[in-house]
Image (cartoon, rainbow, N blue to C red):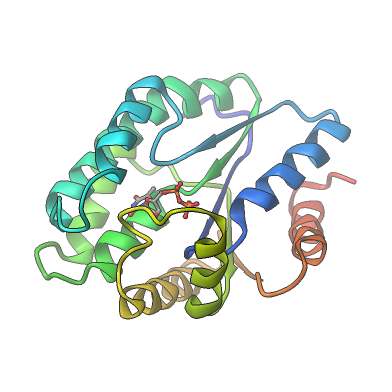
Amino acid sequence: MPNKKGVFITLEGGEGCGKSTQIKMLDAYLKEQGIPHHITREPGGSSAAEEIRKIILSGSVDKWDSVSETLLFSAARRSHLTEVIWPNLEKGVWVISDRYADSTMAYQGYGRNDHLLSRADIETLYRITAGDFKPDLTFILDIEPQKGLERAQKRANLDRMEEQKLAFHENLRQAFLDIASREPMRCVIINADQTPELVHKDILDVLKERFHVC
Ligand code: TYD
């Protein structure tokens, strides 16, 4: 992306880590600061990708194996990038995404753990989808899986991913921590087992330091 003017920020984490609440608070903060921004999500974010989202998230837990699932997430991501993320960044608009490619590595690479797809395969697919484009900053909202799942259960009926067993969610947590240790400049781990206000404060502290917003 030669003409990237905006900032691309992603929020990642396991189930019930509080991403949606944090994205709402971040949205309000950026509005208050007068920073043009676009809030989006994965899977989804463009009209074609939202169609794929419905196909992925509905149905039984074993509807797709990890290969099919990863290809579907990648197809959705490609549309999201070309239709929404890149055009906004080129205009100087900040893009904040509720999940992005680290979720593919975590859920399909570590969580499913069905050995059909290696982590190197997932990285290759990402390069085909996005080249060397990456988020400028990724917040990883970290919480014990048991606590996160309890929060998610209170909220709504569980989707295909949330219905997976506890070991799956423990793999996810480890995945996000591994990703953060491999890319410490891009990824910041936030303790999500605190009040929403304190989590928001931790996020803003990093934003202020990195992008000199006040
Ligand atoms: P969503 O309802 O958006 O869940 P959450 O509130 O947890 O973000 O559902 C998205 C689900 O898709 C979520 O369980 C994570 C999963 N997912 C993957 O498995 N791989 C991916 O690449 C992405 C982007 C999401």
